[in-house]
Image 1 (cartoon, rainbow, N blue to C red):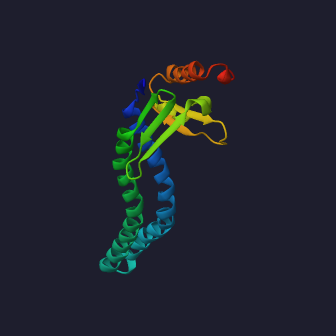
Image 2 (image 1 turned 180 degrees about the horizontal axis):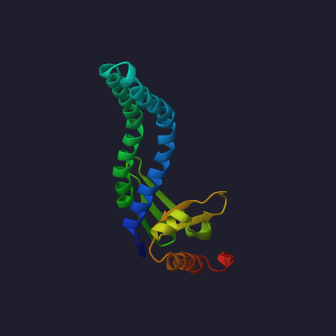
Image 3 (image 1 turned 90 degrees about the horizontal axis):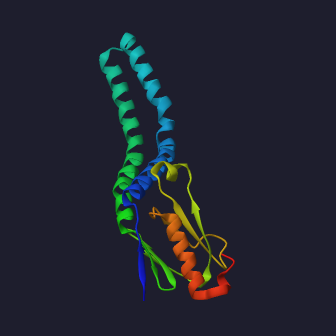
Length: 184
C-alpha cells in the first residue's frame, strides 16, 4: 500500500491556533471583566474623593478592595488563555495527514484523540479556504467534502502546497475509480 504523508507547516498552524484561542478569550474577558470596570473606576474615584474627606486608611481600603475585585475578575480569562497557549502547540504537533492507497487519513488531538479515515470513492470535492486569520499566517484550510454529508468530512489545516495536495487526492481518486469520479 502506497502512503504519502502531507507536509504540515506546524509553526504557522501553532500560531494560528494560539491567535484563534486568544480571540476566543477576548469574549470570555468581556463576560468576566467588563462588568467590573465601572466598579473599579468608581472605587478609584471614591478613593480620590475619600482622601479629601475620609482620610488615608479609608481611601486605601477602598482602592485595595477594588483591585482585589478586579484581579478576581481577571483570573478566569487569564487561566483560559494560559491553557490555550499550552494546548495549541500540542495540537499542532499531533496533527498528521496522509494518503494511504484509497483513503485519506487525518490524525490529531491532545486529550481526545481522533483518527479519521475518508475513502476516496466518497470524496466529492476538496475545497481550499483561507479566511483573514488563515491568510495572515499564510496557511490554508483544506475542506474535504463527501457524498451523503451536508458538512465537510474533515478540515486539514496548514498543509504545505495545498493545490498540489488537492490535485494529488483528486487524481488518485480518478485513477482508482475511473470515470465514476469524473465530475470532481
